[in-house]
Amino acid sequence: MAMETFKVQVTSTGQPNEYQAAVRDFKVKLAPDSTAAVSSHEAILQALGACEAIVMASFNKQQDFTYRDFYYTVEGIKSDDRPGMDRIGVAVHLNTDESKQKCHEFMDFAENTCPVMDNLTNTVPVKRTGVAVVS
Image (cartoon, rainbow, N blue to C red):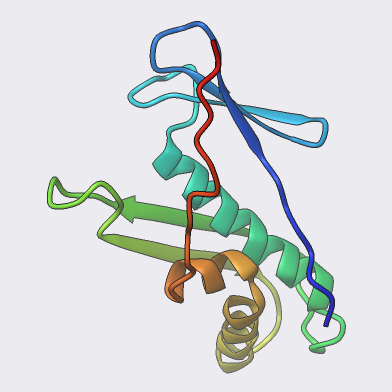
């Protein structure tokens, strides 16, 4: 299987504690404790919900699962014990005629196919690849 590389660049914006993440032509403003930007915790929750939604929309026909509409509620719980979240809860709300069992089976498939879920639940090595001092 071929390796694929993904790259995001994060830069400061000139505003205290405000940053901009850029991938291809898309930009997201990040800031802790701000109503004008997304926090890093919220960005993780957004990525998880969007990833599972993309998996559902991409594989529902292959998995013989039909729905009219759906939405996710993704909630992170954080204490002061660590910098990251202590727990993440995911609830999917499906408008479908499928049985509850088939819904659970499809959601199991979506969770096991979602790369963001995989990265959150399995240890992925993160290694600093450089430090540059720019003058």
